[in-house]
Length: 328
Image (cartoon, rainbow, N blue to C red):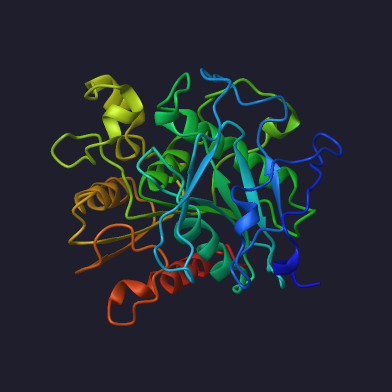
């Protein structure tokens, strides 16, 4: 049976024995031929820590006006989890994919499922992260996305044998606000941000490579995305918060090689966000590849617009991943 015909069959975590997993959002509206996960993995078997609104419900919206195109987004995520996309011919590499949405949403189609589908064809098994959102109301709102990303990386490695993955060859890619979580994972992977819950938390959370795509990075008011500080802190960022949370302030010798891409005419997140991250990586001698396109705006995702050069970025990412050894 082709994996696309498997509709979110529950998986068992090797860490906790057989247990039902929370399905991906909007499972009743799958379109034939659309990228579909084969299952999910819950991040927190005993519930996510720090919830302030126990009655919070997930809300899914379809924002596309074209019935042939899916452009879904979800908020109110109280059960963070990963949607699983196994490669048909796995090469041992894996990618955690983190959708964007301005800290309000996870746009999981064009910034999640479609990239997973593309990377699957390159032999890379993918995991699309439905992470907790700062604006949904959580303790430590500035950290919840990074905490979920750390936990996700560890669970991928714990379940590596099941998915025919080399646990050393797991990367991360994320878009916009998900790019902030991606860059935060890359620079803060070793920080103890949550109390361990099982043996998975003894594993390394460092990605082999990181790919923030049109990313939110900076907390400098001169170039920051205007929604970052209000979402994470509820007020303008202090000097202490900038030093603690801004990925460009946390690059060190253990930061993984990074792939950056953005459009120069991005009016939502200034392109300076990618530039300050590139400069911080170069200053520490970390491998970085940067692609800045003249046009494309914000949120171009996986658009196959052959008249706009940005459409080549997924292949450029694959080339970078291959050059860094993620594909074996």
